[in-house]
Image (cartoon, rainbow, N blue to C red; front, top):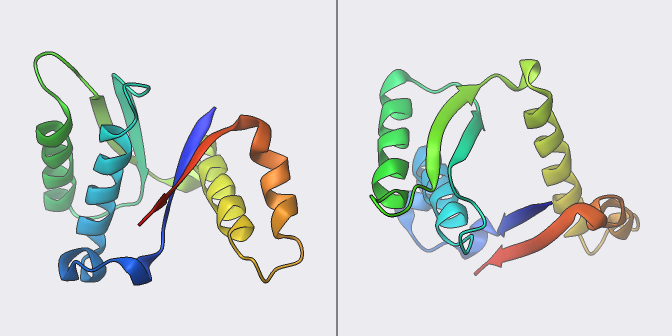
Length: 128
């Protein structure tokens, strides 16, 4: 099972989130993990992408600081991986693409994309 977060970037008011890709990803990954109602604990997070060493270090530190406490470990570890070598990241990209296509009301085949993954989909959270 999986859950999805859909973010309409036109509805974001924060200049930092609108203009800084690293801040955008950091914030929304934290939101997903923080609001999982304890469905996600001891997570091993894999992020597609490279980014410089400083960003990676700051990103992981931010998630640890925001998510983990002595009583509750949400994120066990976090690694950056190359999607070309990781089939799970490739699958996540395909699922995200299917959910994105399903959100397109003007596309005739939009519903077909959701039908394919619906039996594995726990929730779609539309950020507002």
